[in-house]
Image: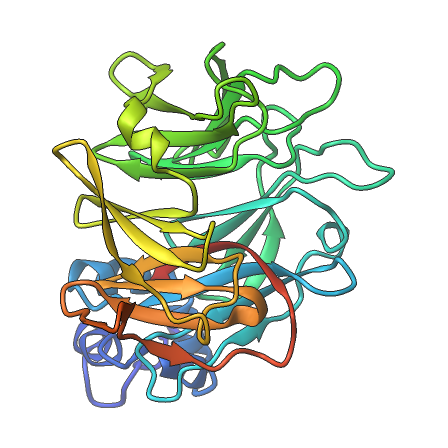
Amino acid sequence: MELTQPALICGLPDDLAVFCLARVPRKYHRILKCVSRRWRDLTCSEEWYSYRRKQKLGETWIYALCKDKSEQYCCYVLDPNSSRRCWKPIERLPPRSLKRKGMSIEVLGKHIYLLGGCGWCEDATEEVYCYDALANTWSEGSSLSTARCYLSCEVLDEKIYAIGGLGSNSSDPHSWDTYDPCTNTWTSHSDPNIVSEIEDSFVMDGKIYIRCGISSVTSHVYAVVYEPSSGTWQNADADMASGWRGPAVVMDGTLYVLDQTSGTRLMMWKEGRTWVPVGRLSPLLTRPPCRLVVVGKSIFVVGKGLSTVMLDVDKAVNVEGVMVSSSIPKLNSDDDVIICKCLTI
């Protein structure tokens, strides 16, 4: 007798069952996995991820890489659309990475990549770990071409760029690696305009911008931009770089920077080459140093202890000089937020 798989939903063709199940909100996907082995395999599959993306059913969650009081890495996730918004820990981080310093994370597709790092008695490493957000599992990924720590990461044209950072004695400090998921390989490149110490980065108009800190000679912010057409790094616009003095995000093609030099003030870069203040955030809600991330039309400001402020820039109004916003209760901790990224499923 020929064995056949049971239907996903009794009495329905599988394609119609997928049509129904894919519309279940993401917060219930963990429950779907418990119904049967077929449902578990479906909700962990590339087919599930591709179908939800094609049908524009994807929901974006925020992931934060943090460090606790013991200088150990931890990771949290937030569903910004939940009625009971709260940060939840992601368990079972790779044990070898917990005590490292200078690691970075990046999101590509349904995966989160944990890259590089170093330790007190450990040189920079080329190790990469991969978190599958559908299956909630960690695995070892393809290694970087160059050992790096304190690097910056961005995604451009469906490839991960691991830029700068400190490496081993044999590493080129003026280099970057690119990861192609189609071949599962990293490729190394070099350019004299890249410096090892990178403080922030973003992607705008199909280009990668990196900020290399304030020059001790000129007191100016040094920033460069990657031109994909030529494969080279060039000096960024000086006026734009001068106001880039905090974490930056891009929303609908507009650049926003959180100035934390005196309180927390959101700035916007206008095409007329000027920085325009959007407004100040309440010191009662923000706990610098903060990181920024964009979900839809909202900017999330995530600070110490994962204190989180959500700001709808299009609808934001100022009351006595302070922008009106909503907040998410912080955790009972003083964890430092290292990096925030978004992943859509």
